[in-house]
Length: 65
Image 1 (cartoon, rainbow, N blue to C red):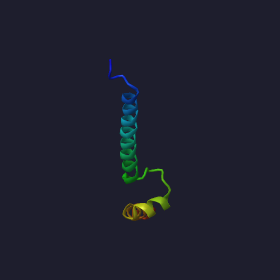
Image 2 (image 1 turned 90 degrees about the vertical axis):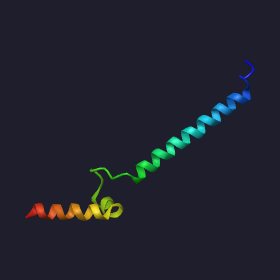
Image 3 (image 1 turned 60 degrees about the vertical axis):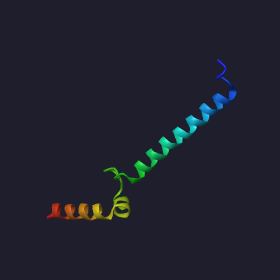
Image 4 (image 1 turned 90 degrees about the horizontal axis):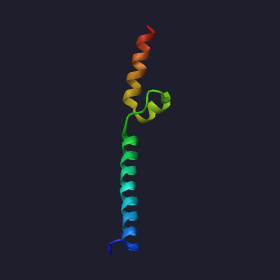
């Protein structure tokens, strides 16, 4: 039981913080790079995904006819 020292627990906490930050960073980058949700405003689609905004405006204009 000599391993249960304060330094060991400090190392465990540090390891948990590093792993948690890595997982949160990965999730954040995946959310940033992913597609916008369908309920996002049209200006957001036009600004961040211009090709999809062109497609959606073309499809909506063809539906009006």
